[in-house]
Image 1 (cartoon, rainbow, N blue to C red):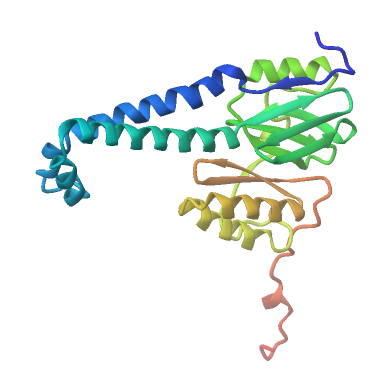
Image 2 (spheres, rainbow, N blue to C red):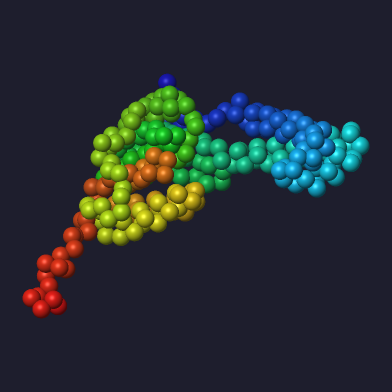
Length: 247
């Protein structure tokens, strides 16, 4: 077990880097070579895209076409590897703080702020003492390795969301939400339906500021309130307050 003063680092390790920078370029080269060798056949398919391009490739000498296709495939594989490397999540945790780094962005969360740490549907979540999400990071890291790292430094790791039973399925105009939250959930639902993940992430942050925590099941939204959430929207009493002459 790691000492409490020495950070424990959890990441994909050298095997992940070897797969990214070795596997993807090789896979790309193979795919590019195969496409180049099949260019004549693909160019004759009436439904195939880029037919003119495949016809041009088919007109090249076989060796030249194969080498060109493999080179383009390697380049594509290197681009995928660079993107994958930038998206890698690295976590360094000690008894005082956890640092979550993805690419050039590092997020730090202090131990005293945290009430629970747990995996949730391909994400790592750190909850605050009011039930608010201090961090939610997409992660394919081993839950067992993460649990061992956090527990080694005295963090409150749990195997599931302690507030899971508090979530309710969102439907428009559902009562109980703070002011403005329903409109944000409507906008976020549209973003989810159109697969606009960046916009959905921004709206999650806006909802957090209203005291609403959201979790997704595909495109379905579930929500709960934090302890610091303001009161819900009051019911519409307009009709009850009208005077006898309708004003």
